[in-house]
Structure formats: structure tokens, C-alpha cells
Image (cartoon, rainbow, N blue to C red):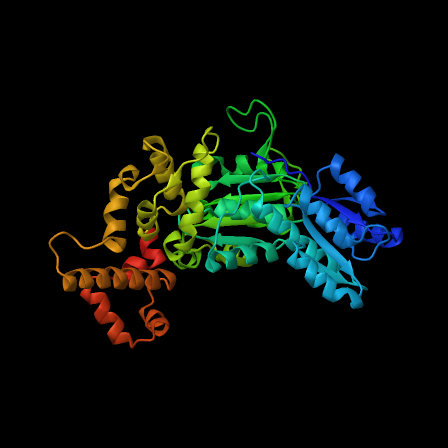
Length: 462
């Protein structure tokens, strides 16, 4: 499967055409589409006729200044990002423009790198805010997830292989698509491959292709997914499922940048950017002999860890609002809302299935809701039980001390589990982060019958 992605459109406005043309050259070299205007009036005329994602404008221009153009742009479409070009004396004005909605400014003289770094960041912010943009949106509020997004966007500037680690349901493919959209390969295909769904004897044919008559049932010559992704991004989801017998062939294809179809003698050059994802600890798989070390080091150039949803509860509310709009946004009366009590329960739940489980829960609640908002009664029973245990009020018969002990126990269990998960079951590292001695941390674990072995990736995978 491939996704057709339209390149970003950038409008460059400067009464000095030479400078505008230089900026356009930098922009087009990065794979985007650039249009030049030499006045604010001409820019507004173009904006009325063409969709643009970003406007780069000089601050000082005759007739209509960059500030005047900024106001006109934001009144037309507040989602268009605006980047200002300014001289040293205009920096205070540029800062004031940022307060009015401009994304950033670049000072003269500037180089290609200075300009394009700001262009990339501006387009990245626009893509995150666009509801109908190419590929799924990134919906988050937490700093923890934001760090993963920042790493993705930094990695996108290179062709380095990327390994995305995270539990099932955390949206690893969404991040891979975001990386592709932020890269210079955005105009070429993004090709996802679900490794767990391919039979072991078909990996070579699926990825490298085959010629007619290569094996029983090969009635026509077929391109492999490497060739389909030529010039773009190949995403291997659950790469830990690759059979050992195929791994050396994949390594060779990556090293030589060429593939040979099954039944063929000729090699074909391929140019792909490889992104892999897994919920396994591949270094442990290497130690166990289930994954080749040389292939692991080849794909593990930039490693990005996606935090589970339970470690970023502040993201639950914005995700719930997004899913409510997705499932009920076309209602004449507007999308459903979520009651405060239901939101409290949702935020307190641990979400073992992560964002995918949350999405399913909201879809179910939307189907069952009887009024303009979803309530606790519309949520799955297991979510209500656990969420109320952590966030709810006292049970009917318990005293204040009993309620306090129950809530403290829930907090301690969640905290210990999160630390063990983050440090792959390493008790020493967990104790250090908690600011406790190792023995004190172990006593807490024993109190709640929590075993470090349950949090070691290798043990979980086995």
C-alpha cells in the first residue's frame, strides 16, 4: 500500500525578486513547491486562488508591509504559517509579529540551513494541526510524547534508518508516517509492511518481487515492496517477526541498495529509507539468537521510544475529544461531548492497549450514548472498575483511613509498575530514579507482589 502525498506549497513574498528567487531555490531543492510574489497585493491575489501551507515574507516592503500581509493572511486562514524575513533593526517588530500569529523570523543575511530549519518546523506545526492533512494527525499534549515527535522530526532531515520502539497500540506507524511527511521523500510512496502477516516462505517474494514462473502460482512478474517504495520510505512493522532465514538477505539488500527478484538473475538498484517498529526488545532477541546482531545494528541507527498512554495521562483528554469528533463530528447538532466523571475515569485507567484501546472504547461509547454526552454508563465495565478505583470517591462502607490506604496503594502500584516498565525490570535503576535504596524499593514490590521479571522485555516476549 502506498500513500500519495502532495508536497508542501510555499509562497515567498519580497519586493527584491533576487532574494525571493534564492529562497524559492532552497525550498524547491527540499522537494516543496515554491511560488514568488513581489508585493503584498500580488501575494493576496495568489492566496485567493491557490492553497499555500506556508508564507515567507519580508517585513519591510512598499505599500503593504509584512505585518499588514500577516494580518490579511490570518484573517483569511489562521492555519497558514507565516515566516518573516527581517533585518537587524526590525527584530523587535518581528517579535511583536510572532505575538500576532507569525511562526518565527529569520534575520538577513541567512543561509540555506537557517531558512530550511525554520521552514521544516513551521510545516511540522501546520501538519500537526491539520485535521484533513495527508496521513493521521499526531494528537498529544504531553511533553513526554512531544520529545518522541521532536526526535522524529530531527531524524527526518537525514536518511538514517530509524527504529521505533513501543507497546502495541501506541501508534508507531503514525509516527513513521509523520517522519515520512517531514522528510525530503514526502513526494514518493510510504509503503508499510506488516511483517507478522507474511508467511515465512513468502518474505523474499513480497519484499523483493518475483518473475513469471519463479514458483508454482507465479503467473506474472511482480514488483517487490522495495521497488514499490523506490525513492520513498519502507516501513517494516513488527520487524522482530522477520524469520532468521530471511534476515541475511534483507541485510544485503540494505547494504548493497539493490534487490534481486525471486527467479531472476539481475539485480535492481533501489533507493529507500528504512523505518522499522517493534514491541520487542531487539537487543534481547539478539542475545537469545532470534535476531541477527548485524541486522539489528543496521536498523538501529536512530532509536525512538514511544511512551505508553498510561505514562502520559494528560494526552487522554485531547485524544478523547479527537475521537468524539471523528465518530460524531458530522451530526447536525455537533459532536458528542464527554462528561467530567467519564473523563476522570478514562484518565485514571491504565490502558494496556494504549491509544488503539482508547479509540475502541470511545467508538463503543458513541454507539451507546443516549444523550448529547457520553457518561460512565457508556464505558466498558473493566475501564470503569479500574478507573473508579484510582480516581473515584470512597466505597459506601469504607472509612476515611481505608479510602486513603486504598488510594495510596493504587498510586504506589502504578508508580512502581511504570518505573519497572521504563527500566526493563532493572530494580537498581528504578530505585535510583525513585530516590530510594534498592532494599526499600524491593520491599515496596514485595508488599504488592510485583515481580521485576514481569517487566523484562525478553521474558514478556517469550
